[in-house]
Structures are given as structure tokens and as C-alpha cells.
Length: 153
Length: 158
Image (cartoon, rainbow over all chains, first blue to last red; front, side, top):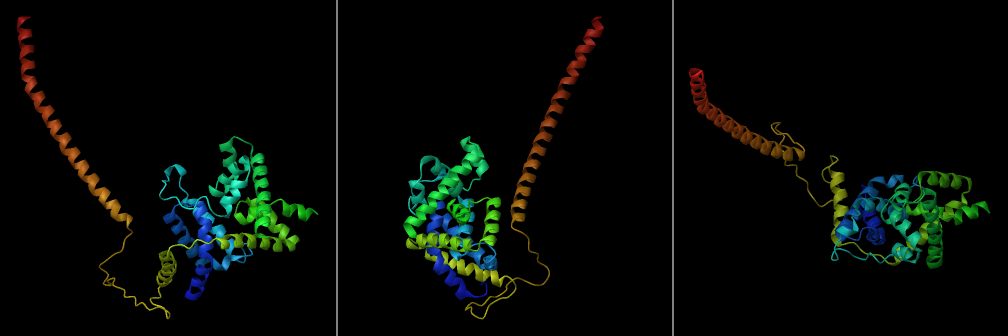
């Protein structure tokens, strides 16, 4: 992959738009989202050999997982954002899904997916037992399954 | 029935989004080995998500494409192969090879600047405290004779 410029360009051209959409939902600041995209593809070109052992069935899901990992590191506190640099935060499949969730699931899903916090940290933040957080996240995932099925089956 | 319940629990969606814990991922991989049909279900979920993202793509700025493809070219070339067969660029190594030059990390620059500033600060403090010390010594020597005179007057009167 690293040696083949055509393959690299093909991978980028096929997935960059879809991935950028997902990244902007996590990092609504354009220049930071751009950095995430550069990192993801640079990583992918060097680690394409690990795709088959990753457990993912599609390249998109494999790339999306890594993009989220990089994006979480780029996440800035919401209080530090100004109106001009925020873009498209309210759009995208995961943002739309987030908006249809009940309040408790919204809170846990936001902290878990968008902020990348662990179950233990969320439990501490919300002053709830970890089991309860696990249950709420489980409910959110069941809702997500239904959401995907209803919209893109 | 048990498998259907497992699938409906949302564990696959959790895995695909990267929210599953290590234990849950291990359990899912174990279940995939036991029930290969789970792989099809994982693919369904990934395809749905992929379709959703492809339905509303947002193209990154054009310069990002250049950066991504350029960066990997540089990374590849820095491995010792200057120029590749498909490249239109000619790389010229302008680093001198006479053995009189060394290459150091950029942090050394910051280190030397801090070191230089600190040395100036300490030099200033050293001069300042030396002058202050001299001044106090002079004040003491001015005071001492008067003190002795006073002691002598007192001893005579006794």
C-alpha cells in the first residue's frame, strides 16, 4: 500500500468524504478535523496489513474506528470553542441518533462516544454505579441498532 | 434463540463504534468463532453505517488530499530511497558529508536558549548580591570606630 500511489489515492478518494463527515461530528473544528484525516490515512497506509486481523469486515468501519481514536485526542472543551470555528456539529448520523435518545441515554452516549470517557469515569462523573451506566449504554446501543435498521436497512 | 438475543443486545453496534470493553470484544470474537453467522451480522451493521456515512459525505479541503499523499511519499523516501520510479521529483541531498557537522534534535535549541538566559540571570544576581555585600561591609566599617569610641568613653568614666 505504501509503495503504490494509485492504491493510496483510491483509498483516500473512496473514504475521505464519509470519514470526514464522521470526524466532524466528534471534532467540530475544521483545522483539527483536517489533522485527524491526515493522521488516519497516514496510519492506514502503514497498517493496512492489520485490517484482516482487526475483526472488522469493512475497510470503512476499520478506518472509522481509528478516526474516532485520533479524534478523541483532538477533542477540545466545548467552553473553548467560539461560534466561528464550530461547523456541522448538529449534522451527521450519530448526532441525529443522539438527538432522538432519552435524556439519560443521551448523557451517557455523549460522554462515551463523543468524549471517549470510560464507563468508570462516566459513573464517577454522574455519581451512578458502573452497572447502571453499562445498562444505559446497552439500551442506547439497542436503540442504535434499531435506528440503523429503520433508516438504512 | 440465545444468539438472536445476543445480537439484539446491541453488542455488535457497540463493537463497531469502538465502545465495547476489552472483555466484551473478547466475548464477541469468541462468539464469532462459535457462530460464524455472526460475521454476516457484523458486516450488515458495518454496511448500514457505511451507507449512512456515504449518503452525506463531506469532502475535506483539497490541500488535505495533497498532504496525505505527499506525506506518505516523504515518509517512504526518508527510508533511504531517494526518488521513486513513479515520482516526477528529483531529491538532492544537500547535507555536507565532511564529518565536521553534526545534526541535533530541535529541543537542543530551546535548551541552549534557556541555558543562555538563565546564565545571564544568575550573572546579574551574582553581581547584584556582590555589590550589596560590599555596600553592607562599608557601612559596617563606618560604624565600627564610633562604636569603639563610645565603649572607650564609658570605660574611662567608670
